[in-house]
Length: 406
Image (cartoon, rainbow, N blue to C red; front, side, top):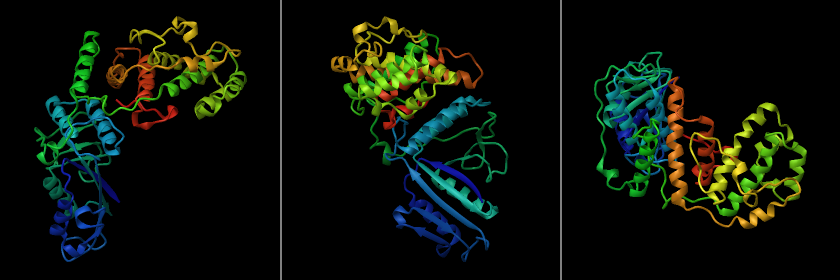
């Protein structure tokens, strides 16, 4: 079996059914679901061109809300497209102008059409798929390149011309980027606040000589975000502060486990933290020490420290006032800290910081992929981005599962 994926801005998938019936004959096409909202097409031998023993299976999925821009959310198709955008962005390119067009095209895509051919994309099956690409004004992404008969991963246009492969090569010279009014008019455009936030942070990073990309999407805005509660943030930082003492070698795991159990924090200690406390290897300790940056961010969110400080400087938890720190030793009671933590910074403040560290993190990843020196300490940037993503409930992820997509 061979496969390829066709991406299109189109949302009317009845066009796919019409095209397949026109090419192979109505009797050859088995439809799962109603014609106007089918789930899968299975095309087998019929009166027309499909050879006996050949099968074509087509399925699709779409953005929850069709659009022409990429805004981070928890929609699976949007997440995939954001990953594709980042992938294209980091590729070398013999034709940078074409690469920019491809990036613009990716932002407009709404539908992912998965096509399986059994046993292979023979001449007629390939012809049918290329007709479909024209119908949908689509682009192909192929990892094994069955349909294009090459051994290089990349993107192809509806004519079969290579837009960009992993080596940076292209044979196409242009790419049309269409935005249909059917969903353009109804698309909720990014708020002025989100766009202004993006522009301010791009300028801030540029002033620091940190390269970023204007094509990165805006993040969620104040009208959409649901921040963690003040109590949830306070509890999380109280646990992190206790666990961090084991990472730095100040206390042993069993003592901190007993402390967390004694003060009713153990049930909210994550599985990864419990595993670390049970067996704090040297490698895990080294990794866990970086969580001091997460502690710093959460204390900042609780207004226990005045600012996040410089992006290229390690935090100094010794600078936190004693009465504002959640862990003061095994004899201390975290209830005092938890009771006093009664205010969270505004959504605007937290989103400003999240957007800034998101763009800074992209810069570090981009430099690493290109074999260049990161413009900022990647460990600091990553951990702060991690904590900020958790604060804004990015993709509704639990602490152990937070992702820092760039």
